[in-house]
Image 1 (cartoon, rainbow, N blue to C red):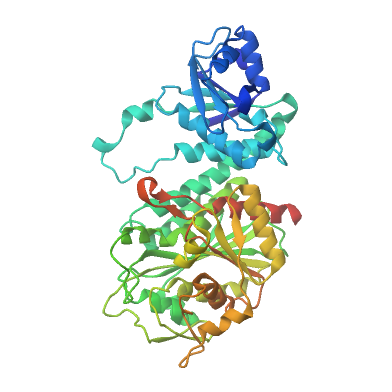
Image 2: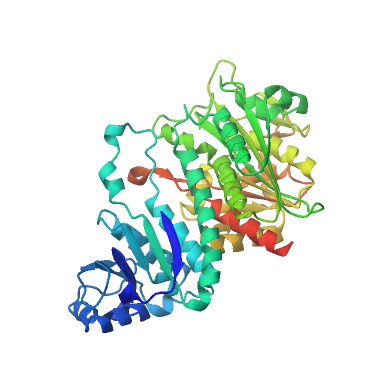
Length: 500
């Protein structure tokens, strides 16, 4: 989809559809009033009949509105004017793009970004318009045969959108558009990787995607293989991978666009490309969704895609430990003891708690970059889903200032997280009679003890952990990757870049 920024009167737009907003109590926005005046009160007459109340997300398509140049006029409900905020703005944008699906409208002009949104400027509104619109039109059909692809729908799809702004905001809008499209590209990459089947998206495939991104962007990429990891002493990571025929990979990406003496931000993404649970085998129902256990890795790749497209002036490192967790005859067993790269030993009580076993070695590896901070991202625990559902990612950290940065980034990106506890009191649940620690701490506070486990390998720097088990993908009829938390991570890096 193509976007452009313009300043044009709504009644003069020569598009297939013009989009304007209506607040609750049938109050017209400025753009809607201009069209109403040009049409001799046509819009207000329709509204007075009760066809549109202005409830958030509601839509009404009008055809052949007199006095206007567009073929269609789409009215979008905005909810109560005094409550119109970032969330409702995004909801209105989403509803407007969804309403155009299947209508045959190939071009549209939207006046939603002109509306005042609390605490946000034109650049933010345009960026989020582009992000939301690209999210709505995203479609994954790469694995479908030609006979199952809807070519007619593709031919009728929305192709161009004009985002209208006041003249004084055009420059800011252009900057916002570049940012929004970069983040949308990162989200789309993360979605694609998550949605691919595990027989395609293997550890080797992820490494190839990182290398392809490097070729087109100037990223520095290094891929470590099993012999490299053996030399480093990554016994925990290699223990998880030993049950699979797919070779493990440790992918290291470096974006060096900050000052030479600037310490990098390191993102570490869990890349289990398929998780059977290993010997502690998962139930068969919905096991297909365990292809999404690499969404932490996908979010790191997606974030690097976004910051490369923005040419963000920051030093950042992405580390992706990736392998499968399979129940082979050579797989690790409950009761095995692994020696991590840090030298700490781990008693494996449950082989399905494997994400932390690959992340801990990656966190130790991160030390060599002398990072300003490290954030790991992982579909780590079902317990986090029970605690927070599917709306918020769980955030744990050993540094409250870093946690506040990430929370603020999540709010700005509308990709929110919730600060979870990680008190010393929980550490005792990881005690082992046979090793330095166990890899699980029992049913109680499972997401907290998982974070406590990781914290033992992140003592040499400021660190945060995002548990995205509830937010990385959707189940049911809308099954698919969400691309989260690419917006949060990108916003975090953008704010860091602005400070440096």
